[in-house]
View (cartoon, helix red, strand yellow):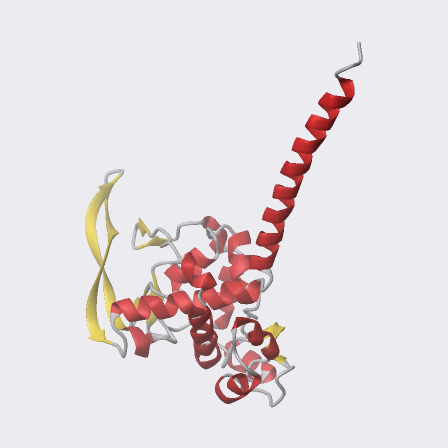
Amino acid sequence: MMKKIIASLLTSLSLGGAMAAGGGVAWDRFPTEKMSDMAALQNGAKLFANYCLNCHGAAFHRFNRLQEIGLTNEQIKDNLMFTTDKVGETMKVAMDAKEAKEWFGATPPDLTLVARSRAAAGQGSGADYLYTLWRSYYRDDSKATGWDNLAFPSIGMPHVLWELQGERKPVFEEREDHGQKVQVFTGRWELVKPGLMSPQQYDSAVGDMVAYLNWMAEPQQKQRFNLGVGVLVFLGIFALFAWRLNAAYWKDVK
């Protein structure tokens, strides 16, 4: 199962828009305002620890860095730490690596840099891809996991958030393409079984988790951006002074 995930992450994802039953699915826009929302980042960290950290690690990120999104050491220990008892440890996967390889054929990939790696592979901002991925699962009993995904057809990873979202199926319509009839996704979904969250609540929760993954991939992103803006402003002011100084220096030169 995991072999499919890793192989696809390294190769097929660079194709951009994935095809589903003959039709492509466009990436949904990730709500970028969540990146500056501490409550959203904290909830995203909680969702990641509860639903992702069982199989996927974040070996390049330490628990105590969560202080940067407003969590105390006590909150981190009480709510997010299941694989270690030291807040300074990295986010290790709960599953034993040898057992994971034996069960799935390969160790589940680390997710520390997943948002940046998806952007590098051509999935829009990376966050757009992940936001679409977790909102594109549907039941398919023909698959080994019982699930498929419009954004990642034949995905090997099951829908770990299905209890929150519930079950739904995509609505297709028949169209003609080069003389052949194909099923194309209409952009609409039909609810089969409700989950613990409403569709709006689930979309918001997924946005929180993607915001956290985006932050985890580069915690200094906001500071880097602010520093870059400051440097550009300084260079602009310096260029103005240099231009006026140059004009004053040469005005009496014949």
